[in-house]
Length: 178
Image (cartoon, rainbow, N blue to C red; front, top):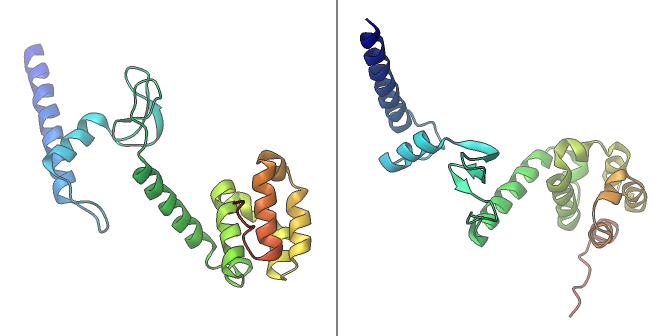
């Protein structure tokens, strides 16, 4: 009887694995990738993690087994970094597009809000109620004063703060030193 239970568990594991492969290959949702057998197998073996984790050897890893640990990993290529940046910018733009304080701004000031959303997250940015109202009223001097008096202003570099506040107040990018 004990042998039958072990044998049944082995069959169950194999069937579960088969059905997982089948589900990955045949049940794609709109916008998802069609996966090859190799991709499906790697996902099955490596797992798929949204956040950084330590692999079985203790190395920092993300996604589907991508080791990003400085000691052993390959990190992210410039192309991968730019892909992630582009996605993050677009996500911030989508979050902001329905807010009057955003959509009634010129491009440079919209980009300030996108950068702040990128840095703070949408909820962090929305916490600046008075500053955002000042922006909606196009009172940029008041918005700059309020932002500069925040805890956030002490958490980023002075150069970054000055750059963001210049763009917010004047609606142009500061000249890049030659």
